[in-house]
Length: 259
Ligand code: BTN
Image (cartoon, rainbow, N blue to C red; front, side, top):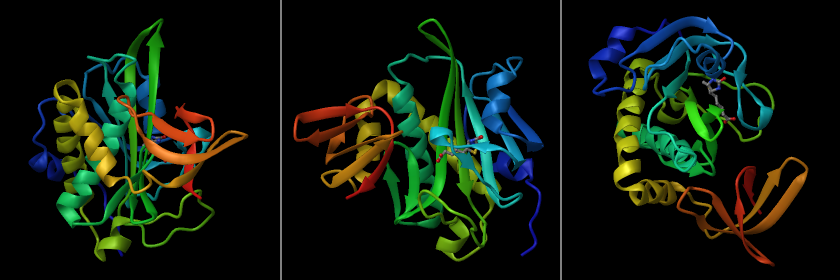
């Protein structure tokens, strides 16, 4: 398959947002879109999107790397600088995964599932990873960067992965427009962000309805520590509630697998 450059105008036609992506910064290549947006403090517009057609040192959660394919992936980061409180950051994190899931359902009618905290899967395979990073002064979060990587048109995956990967092309059986997809994700993300303030329960419920692990026996690994129990629910901030022998524990971070 011939790969092709990203065409901003094709995204623009489909973008219906008021502030997300209205400032769109395009790079042919960067190390990491998250890193670039965190360090370049001259960029401060709420809703700025920094996109790279090729990301060569992508960062993943828990110090992992995120490998993407030039011209075949979406690798971008969204900057939020307004209405941030320590209280809603984790909800924004979940909201980003709901926005991606909703977009994949809208455009390709795929069986999309969410894995805590923010992996987007098609059935059991990972199609999108999200890394949220922030810059704070004292108790105030000044910059929140939501980095999203989507496997769009990769035909094959080589290497060892924590969760087996897939791409939209492999699942939908056809090459997809990256421009159309990013526009849909940004439209959905803005819509869901507004809901966080007005109706946070509906965002939590949208996440819950796509998570097939709630009620199941799981293992949570955080560094050297493994914890076992039943995935009871998520709380009002989106943290995992794990029921083990000693009662219900709140989990803030880690990798979840079914037992
Ligand atoms: C994960 O699943 O571990 C999270 C992966 C996040 C990858 C995206 S790609 C765009 C942005 N820039 C980065 O360096 N990482 C995120």
